[in-house]
Image (tube, rainbow over all chains, first blue to last red; front, side, top):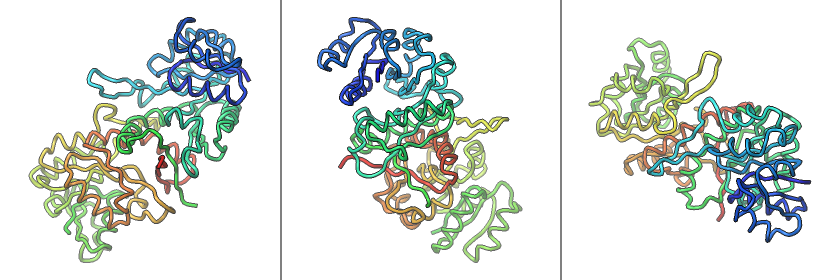
Length: 218
Length: 218
């Protein structure tokens, strides 16, 4: 499958690397065509890895993944172009993290909105699914790093898009029954608002390589 | 031990019942002395269960538990009286849930503040520990409802108060190593902001009898 990834940070590169390894063809998109991180990634990714602009990545992908930070996601996707996203599965991995001058974390938006919803509102023809924003990049593509069952969460308005997302996550090693469907795209509020907690747990454990797992009554 | 509980809702009554069962003496406090829920609870709780005002409960308790809703917690604790809370462990179980006219959930405060912090600021002589606000009432006092390890989270500025909290939770059946310390009272932001996620998971599972469990790399 052809996949366009918006964003050349750790998340974008990690997902891109795994997708190429799985046999997909990937264009890693950045703000400018000559972005060093994008070119460096493509230079070592083999024939199925390409670099380009956000628009190049969106044009290329049958599926598009937003791997930018939440504060710049809308701008990046505008640069990608609504017409290049229309009808496509758009997996949104972002979190609305805003760090203040003293490193203080806040979320924007919060409470009554989320980046996932903002994207779906601004790009109504894209089929947005919020996913993978609850764990660190290396864990996204390698659930076997942890023993036993642990969970991912998806939210989106389009049932077919969620099913496609579950299938793609399955290629990463996530059994479908480990992926909990939080309902429509407003479910993105829940997972985005977990970040302050996630960061505290990270400090407690001293490693980002952990994940949520749910116990419930049988 | 003598324990004062502020709030006669499901959380307050569940904690009160378990504490009496464990041999503690409890005063369940409400806004007015003739509160029907308080009197009904005390009427069936045996000789170690009492009902009274918020002030009665705070005066009575060597430990005080805030089991009111987050939107009314400060008012309830003002009625309890700062002088009756001074020096005491004050376990804050509240969440800042605000439901809009159409049932829409928001949190207030959010992001840069939390109910736990508001309480600690307004009652600086109380030793506030945020705890137990991440799971449903029946689970708080009966971790064996779920198989294997699952987790609680505490946050507070006073290490001694956190140790006392861990000991009391131990009486409920929580092993100390299942209780993760999120640091100072600002850690309350993290657990309070999990509520929108918690509610989505509740809808997904169809039961509130679930809990977070963490997997991490060894």
